[in-house]
Length: 379
Length: 166
Image (cartoon, rainbow over all chains, first blue to last red; front, side, top):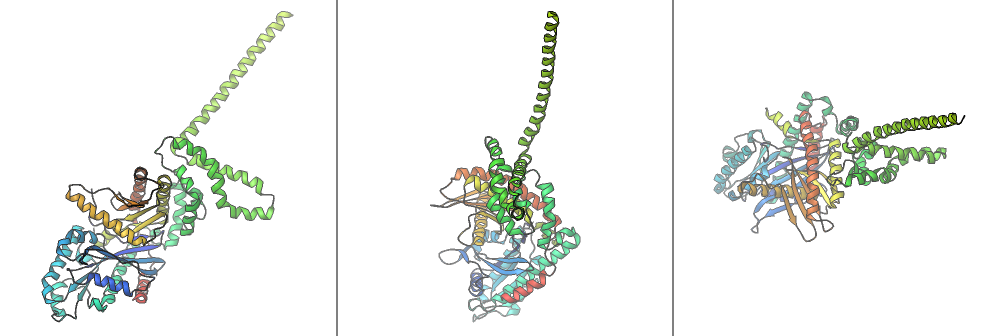
């Protein structure tokens, strides 16, 4: 089936409070795309930049892409990250170039200002349009910045000519000498601004048309969902329930972290994989006993401990109901098969009991009758 | 569909609830398969979530490279008349990685070493894949109705952050 057309997206991850946007440097071979990225890598503050990864040939031509994440820091509570890629410029590498374009949120077109490169600039821009079209995208709608690089070259074409050649969309353009670093950051900043503006514009547009709940700030957005999650969706696979049940989504990381540490064993047994038939009963048997005592206290210890400390009598009786509760939980949370079994066996048991009692009464009556008869016969 | 609507439909917004569900699936998978690390990456190379041991080098770079590697082999597959190679496996001396497509938009990368073997990883990954796919479908359905949910002053603070950085 492959990828549906136009599957580009800014990824917004509320769990990690992170926004990822993809920026691509495009342009003809040797126009300075990788140099741009290298300059950003050298000059961006260390905490903000990630590693620069290059997949290049021996001749130092980009083969697949160069990649570098750039962390913008926390913007309105969301860690905002630009994933920056360059494409291989050489005509030969179009298939890999196209791959890098997939899902990009903004393009910086790096043009080479030399006279000899005019044709190749135009060709590369055309190629960009074609490749975007394959993803169902239109360059006119895409955040685009044009950079006229190598302005220091002796035979540099005038900016007017380049604008006429390349800038049919009226995109903002910058002059640059990438290997000295000149113009690199203004270009990037301009694109970043457009991409982020696009993002927030969309969000406000979306907020107007969609359910209000979706528009709440991250931390709050998660909170109202938590109850629904527990009642509706989480009901059958009560997976990390012990973890999810204590102050859940509101504090994202800590909750997740504690879930990781302790609840791992539980989801395994409860939601868990059921590929092996034999594993189910085994897990069912183990669940009430082991995790019941191991997991639950971890979570409840603190609130309970406070009570226990103050009353001093509490601990012993408090413990039994607690374990009971845990033992009960897996039973109801176990996969349908297990539950059916439990439901099915109980009535049978009850029926059996009544049968026994009826039989017993009849038997007793019979014995009584026999005894009475023998006694009467003696008299 | 307008450009705006298109963009909205294309975007995936993950909330904590979904990430928690995904995480518990990955945890279960790791426990059973004894693999080191499991991560979900969207096909653009952005990390969705990671479970298990941390990765020494940059997680972002690894994600980008996994997505790139998958994309490249998909082109190879197309040349051979396949839609894609749904599972890739790169074997190293001590560490290996398996990459698997999960639905149309996401990849699952599993890093494992000598404590387990490829067969075990593949077997459990198959099961995990199915479950994760269901959750992701849910995300996709729910994403359509959602805005990006960003704060209203996002734009302004973004500009401030840009000014600070450059």
